[in-house]
Image (cartoon, rainbow, N blue to C red):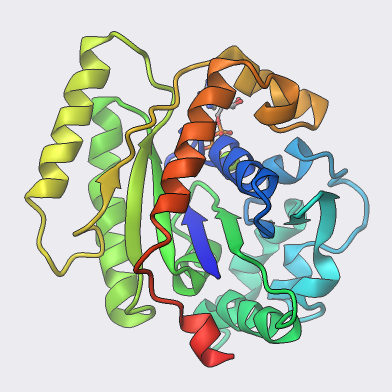
Length: 277
Ligand SMILES: Nc1ncnc2c1ncn2[C@@H]1O[C@H](COP(=O)(O)OP(=O)(O)O)[C@@H](O)[C@H]1O
Ligand SMILES: [Mg+2]
């Protein structure tokens, strides 16, 4: 089981759009996928048609210890489950401030999930992280086998990236020694602009020159660039992934290619949960 955190502490870079469409793209190809919404705004839950205002079970109940993951997930499409989030999740930061082992709650919940579903294991868990380096994000990075980072090709995005990379290195040292950054995906890409091309070159050079011990040592910049496409912004209003809403759009094309690249990275990856089971 690959457990992928889609994270960047910057908002509006394409985390949710990528989480939903990568999860849906993998499910379409027959993979069993669970998308865990870790943002109290609940955008990926509502993108897939879950009404987050109702008093339903969410990831908050998992953090507070009231529910197991299997009890909170909802089947939204063939092969695709969502563990929703809503504003309740915001309370976790305060409620867990002094709790011992608070970094491991999600990891333990996923291990339990894997044990209980041993006969029909999931292939992928995709975690849509909040735009913050908070307790919930640390839980995601502690539970993850890998990280995908959406990057918007702007100079300011690269500044924020070094902070993000330092955090992943710290988590790798202290909490999750197998953590790797699989890749960076360029989202909201403006084709044909000098800026996008320059930032992409800088990013590739940075990765090539990086310390071999760093979690991003083998990270790549995915070849598939996610171009700016209005269909991607419209799809959530119809509770559909881009593959259903606009299958012929550039958005569906770009995410379709990215999903193939993500699938191709499955080789040679360590699987701590299957060895624990
Ligand atoms: N490639 C894209 N083309 C056009 N709009 C996009 C694209 N990717 C994301 N968006 C829109 O940009 C906004 C921010 O994207 P989102 O995925 O919610 O970012 P994040 O989760 O990082 O905050 C949303 O309104 C989304 O619909
Ligand atoms: Mg989001």
